[in-house]
Image (cartoon, rainbow, N blue to C red; front, side, top):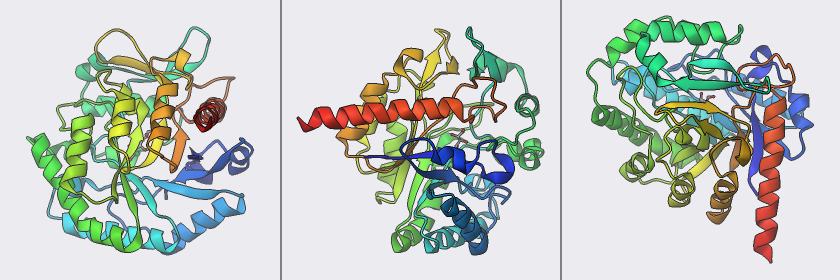
Length: 358
Ligand code: DNO
């Protein structure tokens, strides 16, 4: 059985409470982070301990850290890279000493996930996050940040922290002229540097898929397809160098065969984000959907079956949901639709397990 968790942004930022998550049947824990610690800084053991205690007092556990963010100094290999890597290693040691052994991260330059509308109204009044590449092409990075910021109804969205993105121009300067091979070499440098610590403390690193699966604003992107994932797995052939298999991100590019990708990564997936999307029929225009197959274009049964077939029993979480029933929540991270989605995914899993016992 996989372990169901929910992303939780901490008491200060999240509209959803731990006690509410605990009441969702089958929930084992949360996926969280130390919000407010800048990428590149050390995660202090006391802060990790306090976060862990808070979650445990609510009867849950921390299944995975999403994310220990990788500083742009590491991604862009600036003069400060080795110091940031040393700090990253210290953070991993501190996490492991507190009993946390699964860490999600991404290697996207400047921007984390990108959407052009965070509140797209659907026919039934629900809203979803959506993406239209022509919008990205018509704005500059600062305007892109302003769109996300003004759409976020006051919430600080993960990866879109105003302090960091206030320096958008500076950040772009770091990547000027960088191609994918150079970014890939910087990733491998980072992974090779942290693997001895991951071996010693049994820490599973899980790289997140680029979202969406193509370049935005001419920035290099290296985690977009089966070939990319295997290139990363093969460059550092250590089981602790693993993947966050995010079905939603992969689905932005319909040429990604997700069940096939899952099967091909047997043993290297340590964390999963499971959600569905709708393709518009126009190239690079898509929107998010409820988790159930009939609401989007992915075959969620085939996806859950692929996880079952490779014996995946690690943490997974429902991902961005629709905003429904008038909830005032962070875009994508309301309680209601993720709760619905989680029960659907658990239902698929139960059926697959029982059908395969016969
Ligand atoms: C968006 C998330 C991403 C993800 C990071 C992982 O909702 O899927 O922000 O957490 O890319 O580092």
